[in-house]
Length: 107
Image (cartoon, rainbow, N blue to C red):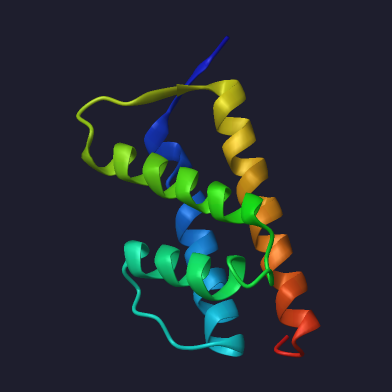
């Protein structure tokens, strides 16, 4: 089994955060770029009212935690299977938000 440096996964969250902010801006409100603010607004404004499925909130939270670990841990590694799953989850997350934006005629 190969090991992937967790810093290699840092692109997953930056890819999804702009998509979250776009979904929020198109449907509800503008949100500052801080990950915690985006995550909270995503949950409050899109997940809790049932506009986006709760599974996507969990995916976003997991990606944010992994990003923070990669940023602040001295040495952080992740196995290849987890890396592949994280990237697949990020793709599904962005696809879901794109579908949401089409549904509300914002895309």
